[in-house]
Length: 220
Image (tube, rainbow, N blue to C red):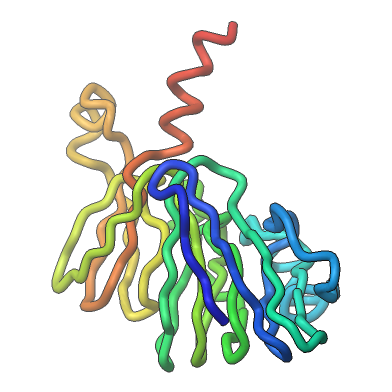
């Protein structure tokens, strides 16, 4: 499979060429355009019950679409995300990543989708009770609102809620106030994520919640 992520960082889209016999699985609604000879199969994301968990607790779609090239010629496919922003690709090579709701776009063969319990603290911060977890050997594509920042942390690292996109499962999340109660309210920072551990995280440079809060008073 050949791919190119174009129109980065604001309007990124994945331009994919599937060679004969190749396939890719994507979030429902991710397809922008495709060659008419590609075969499309829709199924529950990871099975019926995992799909329900992803849908109602993890903020993901109930279904995924698998695009397969069953011809003898290379065929093209374009995938993207619903929000404005960047897209990244990670070659897992046996690693595992946890995604915030809405970040996952698609994956190649060899990648498994699962659900991980995120805890009440994650739900309290507006991030959902469950996280989508991807593992195995293959490529996974994910998107963000704004630019994507990759960072390796060791020890404690603080991230404002709404900016964490993906992280390795060995990293622990603890929700807390940015400062004291009065300081957190008056500073406008509110709740923050205190991440602890060693591993890679991916951040988005903008927050959808921040955009909603900015637009809400202007729409009244």
